[in-house]
Image (cartoon, rainbow over all chains, first blue to last red):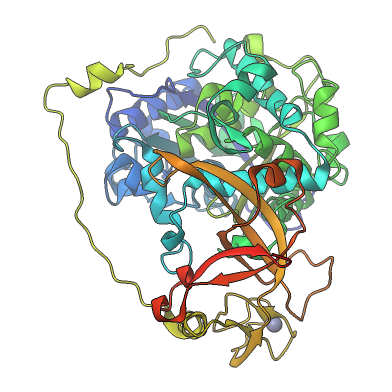
Length: 392
Length: 176
Ligand SMILES: [Zn+2]
């Protein structure tokens, strides 16, 4: 790691766990957190006794319907009687969890961290979209009666205009990711669909149809992170955290160019600088950009500098981002294919890089040899960017 | 990975017939103050004016106004009236309400980039508002003709204005 900052310890991921992602799960949020945490510990060959600290991520309390959801999840996440903290940056939370776990270890404060993300959206009734009503500014936005999908539609429309991209170009992301998810045993929305299926699905807010959007989900994911010494003791194939970056823009999303995600780009630059990466489009072998909507994957690929601005739709069409392509993106199946239990979905992306970089992704393993990957999430009102670079 | 993954899927009917299923509806109610800067903005709307605030340090004019410049971190007190005209940055057609019910009549909404000093044409950020559009068609949105279109606020009649963002009915094309 060619880091520009002082760290006490190098940090590695040594284990990962995940539950099924489904529209409705019987398990409570803390039961889901427990299942993922236990699987990650087993995978690392460790027990809870070996864990120094716990980091928890879960998106707005309003989804699970439990106030102080981090505290509620603490025991299921293994945080009982340990230094435990919840981090939260909206949809960016899932990648913020391993970022926070990184600084716990890099600072020398903890040798091992259990990082757990959980989301249960099924309690919100009749549909979680109602819960999103409360993220809008109460004075200037709520009186206009917005639906969450509006803001995505506005960004997508601007991106299409700026980049001369068509709806069918963008729908290819949904086709690719849902197809990739056919090989993912936890996936909720895996399917062999066509561009025509996306375009003819229910029109919600033009240009957004239902199949442009990831589904509503319950689920949990977890990672175990460890200092270099500890990591080398427990595994022959640690996956190193080489760079992290996170930034926040303001809530005035209608005061900026919506065609390019500055909030992701700044975070990516921080992460690449730490990892010593100067040409990410050449040096990154596999990527998990955040894809709650199909255009978002393209938007984020450009924010992550894996393609030039407005170049992603053409590269997508040429197969560049397929599993067999030059720079596979969302080989997991992404949020569009695996599902979107918000915080857990972001952490799922980091877990997928862990499996890819250990050549443990099975049928999902990308064709090319992999040395370095980047995962990213975005959150809030077009505001938060969270980026992590991993290497083997 | 050949292991079995935890999690017990429930069909919709199964969930709603679970033993001990609790239904709960919060009854929290709120009253939000608009604060120092936005109150000036809302007072302006009541008079049919778009009010911005100018940073003494970098010269940006902010709409909606805020009490401090986020770049320079200095207080802003110089409120200025803007013409209210601008161009459409993005526009979409909504067929669903806040709670996802189908709407009888689709609504066109989006972002207006307002004419304001302190920015260049290439600036990433700009003075602007999120609002409804009227006088433009669904076809204008889909074809892209709407983007870049010059618009101005259509005000509610003065006696119906309350100091709310809805004192502007919508933004409509300048030529109409
Ligand atoms: Zn300033």
